[in-house]
Length: 331
Image 1 (cartoon, helix red, strand yellow):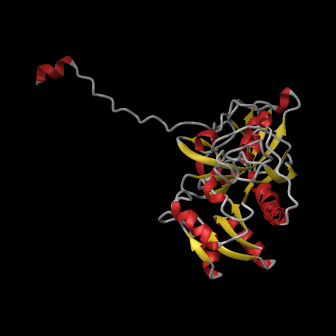
Image 2: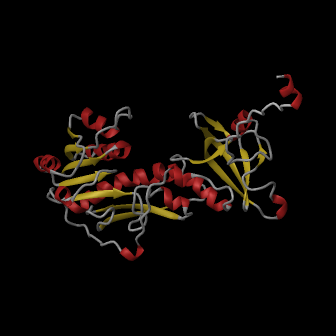
Image 3: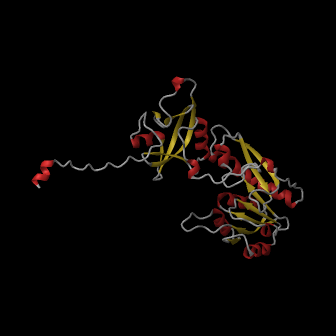
């Protein structure tokens, strides 16, 4: 088939590679302009290496984008990780329209951080959806879905890179075949089951050490590797990764108060929380250094009883000299 790829980054490149590998004709590639100082976009680099027509438009709205897609004369447009808004006047140009990838089981988890939130909320499964893009964000009819499990020790990284990424690439190929051959079904999303969540960024990733063990454990997993759940030590922001949960079975299992380090081992440190202890294996400091939990504790002089979530010590105020009556008289 003759297609256009619209996307960016590693997922967009992998989708491009997959269509080319099986002999499809990619007439052109659309990807967002790169910001100054950012890493080269893998999709843009791959398109140039293959000698494909490349469009880096600041917007997919308007005549420039419509003209570019129309002149490619493609059967299908494939949207693989697209953050730009694509209006109906654009996506309806190809003979068989456009298909889009979203890493959740729509209509659940519409929005930009749809992989983070299922883990943060402690869900046991998630998945991916190939759908028809409409002017509503992630609201178009569903063409194909794949469900994947979320294990108790899974992270954002393991769910995405091990499952949603490779399965998503294959799902785009399968959905394209269904649409172009006319064998597809378009199933409207059930609005009664829909949910929307915004970005999971620093504000959402801050750890409250008074929360339950499950809440903190899921937050760290759902933010690993990005944005990285964080806390502070003497005002320095640190991000925590590779966490293991140790549930308290009896009162004697609880050592210290929530947020206090209960134990420092050879590779990790443990923190007391409501319901048990969390073992932290990796810490990244504000400077970007990534250390084992034990190395970090040693570098900061943290021992059992030291507390996480602390602010910078208040500066010491200079104490004014006491003036005695005799000093005034002498003056």
